Length: 243
Length: 52
Image (tube, rainbow over all chains, first blue to last red; front, side):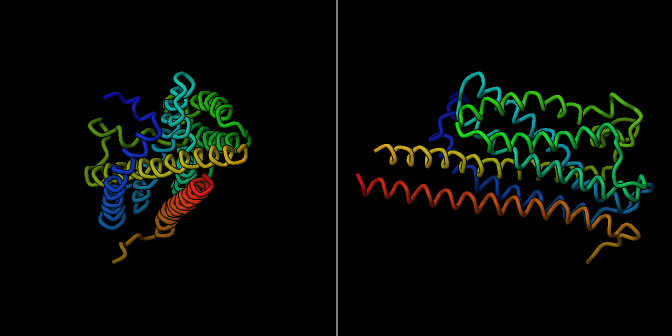
């Protein structure tokens, strides 16, 4: 069996219909466990007080904001190279989810930054590249909405996705390129290094990340199914008009 | 039941509201739009079947 079989809309609809209930249940369980654990059952950190609890929503949303764009890049490249419609529709379906994850990362970062850094916003490399990534998400969605021909829209948004990938990567690695920023280095990757994250935070954080990934998969499947149906609806309406 | 959040209570609560609120809106919008398009497609297919 080849992965390209799922480029067939009928096969995709059938498989996603089977998978959705399972993924949805796993999403609810992992998000509930992770967030309840993080909010109610973690202790204050020495330097951050109870604001350490913001970690459980900020880190997963920031990770998803970048990784959803990477997923859109991969599916856009599949469209541009192999012309599989489902992959273009999956990229389109993922964009609003990515935009919401980016705005959550920006808002929770600002709310955390105010008491910790003494400012809601700073033109720090990571914060700035995240803001630009958010604008790219908005531009991507606007471009899909502005072009009537779906294949042309998929082509142009695919190219935009390629360009925006520079900022997705910058968002991820900005703190490594420039040292003058306020934002600290990656938290989750420090496990096992000289300044590791305490295991009492690490486990609920990993569960929250799993929950956010599963939430993305659930919403992506739902939204891609809707896009496929919408494409068929428009084709039928056009056929009716021509008859 | 509410954990002791000390002087950062507002920060923590706002962060969770700022996360769960948009995620709930996105999920509801996704389900609503999905149901609307599904119903419209079913109606269109029914109409075309009737019209031959």
